[in-house]
Length: 401
Image 1 (cartoon, one colour):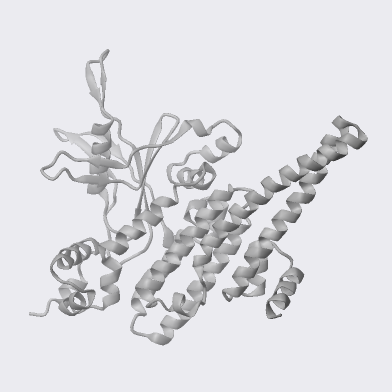
Image 2 (cartoon, one colour):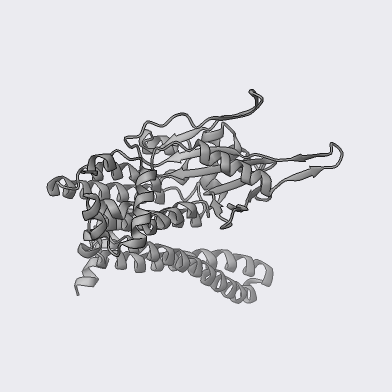
């Protein structure tokens, strides 16, 4: 009997489960692909290794400042936290990341892992990334109850146990053939509704980059490229279309990187680093699953330069510190000549400014040179580093020499 059609009609969740079981008894993805009459790329897409890597990348997005993720929470739950944060009404001390691991008292002591659980003031929010547009209601109920049990409180005055349930939401990364039911759920007793839980969601494919910027949902900027995954799935057997999609994909990644670099006034430096790092990791993921590592081999867009961007941030910080020390020294020298107090202040300010400017420019030039060596265009390097095109041209002349 040919099971290929039945397999193709399975939900992503069932498909993942089949591949997970087969990987325990079959050595290679090639053999699994042959058995299921699918491509190796389809097997790779659902491998536990790739899935775990993807989960790790997505969760890392929350290792950012509140400026990065509060806009997304506001959009999902109709709150106003980002404005409160900028106005000093909401402080860092009132924002706490809670444990996302819940050990279930089963025979195997299974661990249920959530993506992000955040407490803001007295409110608890759980946000889940979901790669496919599957129904999540049952899983969300488990999360909510496990959280309530893990954080149960006995109220002596009322003589009752209190189980706090978090507000929950889902961020769907890609649209698929499934047509899921609503994720809203109710808790009932004797047919009477004890609680009605509404689950808001964001569907990435329905968002454009402008909407992300206007609602300040900067957490989602790197995730927008997931719109390519379903398109790439359909184009796997068409090399010409796949090659064009690769070019479009890389162009969009570069534009997101350039646009994100302009957010330095709204976000913290580490937030920009996280955006760039995540984009780099996603490029590696797509390259491995869909492009047979052509991007890495050809050097078309070496997003490993993310590490150099992080290094660039470190170099800038070192330059600032060096400039500060230089300013102090110059301030002391001028203080002896023009009067200690006046000279020290003037020397600090002028020395700091001049040293800072020189240090930052030199650090930027160093990074620009590395990016040019890796094949990036002069225009892209200029936009990313903020260095003038004239200086970039001078760099290329020196490299040619």
